[in-house]
Image (cartoon, rainbow, N blue to C red; front, side, top):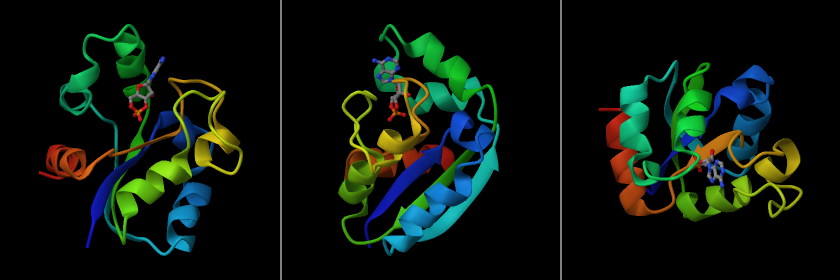
Length: 132
Ligand code: CMP
């Protein structure tokens, strides 16, 4: 069964959106097979976001992701990687369609409520970082 790594980010937790977001995955028929709520440290985020290290928004991204707790989940199901990416919507809030999680709940490219792996390789890599 395909697996992906999903994170509900600090703004999602602060705004009390956890239940709503988890319901969307469960209503779609996906199973949350592992999860933990933690305050992520810089070290784990540097591994997770290694590909963005040179980007202009990297500093802002790390301080946002370390400002409060995150909920990290492994979610399983048929085509779960691609379907959850669709459920999340585009990163740019102007492009995220209404009905997606970002379309409904985000108005910023950085503070965008959720993260999900974008391929099988990323899912394997991210699951090993967060659930080693
Ligand atoms: P995520 O899916 O976790 O992957 C990288 C993160 O960087 C992204 O969600 C946003 O939180 C952030 N991000 C991506 N693009 C931008 C951008 N143009 N400006 C600011 N933050 C961004």
